[in-house]
Amino acid sequence: MKMIVTIGRGGTGKSSFVALMAKHFVETGQAPLLLVDADPDQNLAEMVGIDLKEAGKHTISELLVSTFIEQGGTTVGVPPTERIESKIWSSGLFESNSFDFLAVGTKWVEGCYCMPNAALKGALGSLTKNYRYVLIDSPAGLEHLNRRITSKVDDIIDILDHSKKSFDHVKRAYRIAKEVDLEFVNFYIVGGYRFPENLGGQAEADLKFKYLGKITSDEQLDEYVLDGKSLLDLPADNAAYVSVKRILKAAGYV
Image (cartoon, rainbow, N blue to C red; front, side, top):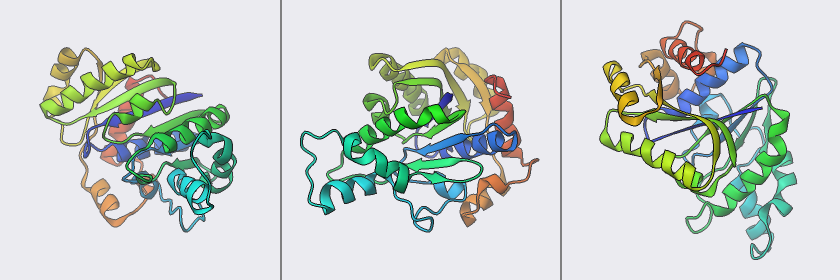
């Protein structure tokens, strides 16, 4: 099993990048595959053609509310995985012929993701051994690194935009990952849709991480996102998809 975590500031194209990675792994027969939407914006499901409500599935946050709050339970002194792990498998895990899918969901109770993240970490510990790849779409902030929704990662990919804040995000993310003893093999940087092509070399020199390339800006992809269409249905020659395949090849994926 290999785990790839995609991070970056909001609006850099993390979710569409994860969706296009999934498209590549599905089309090249590299299954089984698990997609994890850890971003409260919950864009990834739509980008891979999933309607959780229609499928009768729930986010981890929703399952926590129904288990601990609506049923009159208490969250004090009870590790969430002990009471919710089976529910995540039965009511939260969306399964298809091509991939499986989990979502953390929107902010739980008083603005803290501690319990949803803990529940996700417990579920991942049990589930990941069943998959060839686990792709995690992370939120824009770095809290998920602080709380370590997983303790061992193969590749961290930070999506850049053309701003100092984006470069600073990379530095902070790397520092936090080291501070919390997150095990990872590679830390890569990738240019987002609006990232200038000629800044790749400068980004690599300044940040000291391998630059894998830039995601090509593409009107067809924008139309799919605007219309709520699955990016898995993009044609094989779509420019953004082709660029993501080049990025994955540069990272050693076939």
